[in-house]
Length: 408
Image 1 (cartoon, rainbow, N blue to C red):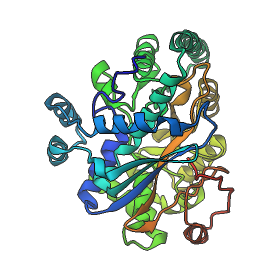
Image 2 (cartoon, rainbow, N blue to C red):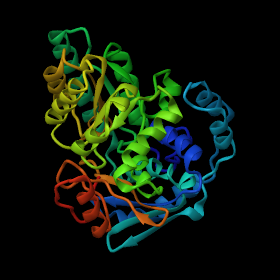
Image 3 (cartoon, helix red, strand yellow):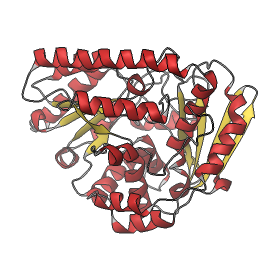
Image 4 (cartoon, rainbow, N blue to C red):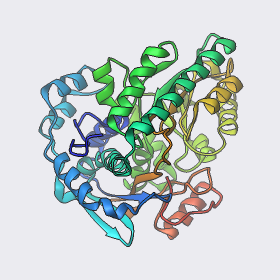
């Protein structure tokens, strides 16, 4: 990897759900102010604080970029992207004053603070900037990629072998969700290109909008936790924030982008809000924490209780998947509900090096704390324990351990 090459090549190289949430929030809450913070949750090979100067330089470069006309034309071609949002992006530039980099001991700190429609898109860029700088510094790229290519070919062989045996009307479908934690930009492109060529009947696209455009693939994504979390601070009764967020999404996209995220306050609380109205309007649900089999069974039972045929809906699994686990879930749910699998780190950062577990999450909106109550121990996210306790009480959510540094 070229240590002098800027990490970010294009503002289009972001996850699709950043653009879709960005548009929805620009239209509904353009004056919201938020704070995002970076956290590394595992032990890197060297202190990430040593990357501070390099991260500062990459952020300077990021803030000098703007969308090209070709990129804007591509976004305009996506039927759910509206012309006024493209007009906004045509004059958009990241403002360096809204993001600060520092160190606390051996820890790297990054805080983005300002208008939500100006700072929310920093997240993915910060994560893959840190990742690529980290792996550049570790060196040994040639040997790492030799091993990574062998592992990728083994995954392709596994899909071909098992999918042929499984059969069924609904094929095994996987998507690349690996932008934020990739080994490098060049490696992600190689992975995505290889999968598209080797598994055309199974590989359906990528969350990386830049690569989708470049390789002629489908960009994949809808919403993330920050979209629903922000509604905790938008003036709705807290008990109603989830319904307000889902309604806001329905009004913005009117049938497009119909996969709802379920784990901001736990699957049980989500299903209490996901009534017949929403169940008919949304195409399906996305899993991102907790036991995936138990979650899927709850989703199927919920659809049946509403007299909706589960086979008309889709479950998207995206919680730390690898190919064997995705195939096991496919076997379990085949013929009962449609499924697809978003795989990230295991596709774009499966090398001899240990991957970083880094996140950059929304922690406050309009001066109020916001929180994610996970169904999995260790993934609850909140810095204000009083608000977290209140949220648990409102949504009847059991307490789960909160590790130092927040959740993912």
